[in-house]
Image (cartoon, each protein chain N blue to C red):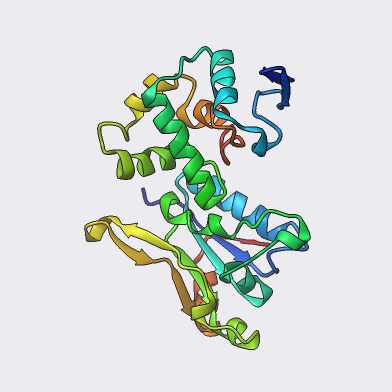
Length: 110
Length: 135
């Protein structure tokens, strides 16, 4: 499988996670989001950027529980909760947002 | 819940050169995501997994040592490091990365998760675990 961005082909696995993490660009994120039927807005970008920073610091994509805990710490309780995250990313904030953020599938995510 | 089993993951190998160290950490993260009671033990060359300033540029693999610092987010609060193993390798506690967790019972204060213990204390840690997985 692959995504098409500005005439460039970006490889991904059968579930849609990109193969080469350095291929990621914000334009690609928008293309992946579209394939997931998600329209990117400021709130969703905030989560995606947060995940990329988390990966940068710890070299892992966090599990949902950990994402929500960490988001609560940095974005506050009105955003760091299950309801908010699942409204933004209905198929799972860790799974879907990580895919859009160009990260691997979270460890422990089935 | 009183029937949560205590899992102890024993790490005895250097971080790179074999896949054991990374696989152990992955299993720990999965176990912790399912809210098991998880503790880690580091002895023999395993103590090198926690050393500061790892640089893997020359060997073309990912430096996964920053991931240990995420363990606090996963509620892993016990990383036991054997003092004798450190000393035999010319290392001390100061050579190790910092791993902290937030203590729920103490106003979420950040506390160090790494505990340096003697060989005899390590034996007690192992005896106390319900399940010991060796990597």
